[in-house]
Amino acid sequence: QVQLVESGGGLVQAGGSLRLSCAASGRTFNYYDMAWFRQVPGKEREFVGKVWSSGIAYYAESVKGRFTISRGDAKNTVNLEMNSLKPEDTAVYYCATRSGPTMNYEYWGQGTQVTVSS
Image 1 (cartoon, rainbow, N blue to C red):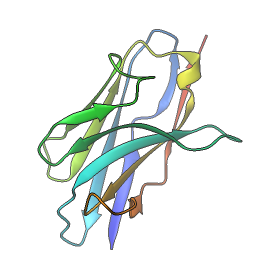
Image 2 (cartoon, rainbow, N blue to C red):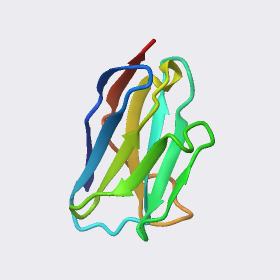
Image 3 (cartoon, one colour):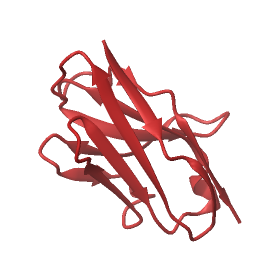
C-alpha cells in the first residue's frame, strides 16, 4: 500500500503565495506521475497539474504561469508552489499518483485546505 500525505495548506491573502508538499510512503513504488487536484464543495474535482518521474511538469490553463510543480529533494515527494493566488484558488488540494499512464490515479492523499482571502 502507498500512502500520500499533503502538507502546507493554510490561509493567505490574494496575491500571496503558498507551498504544498506531498510525500509518498509505504511499499516501494515507482510512480509514473504525481498530480495535484483541487475540489470545492459541490463541484467536481479539478486537475491542477502533474509532474512525470522525469521531472517534466504539465499544468491546467487556470494555473499556468502561477503554479509550479516540482519533484522534492526526497524520493517520492512533490511540491506545489502557488504564487499570485486568487480567491478562486480556494479549495481542498489533493495529491495523487499512479504507476502507469493508462491507469486511473490509484493513490490519493487526504487533502489540505487552501483558503485565499480577497
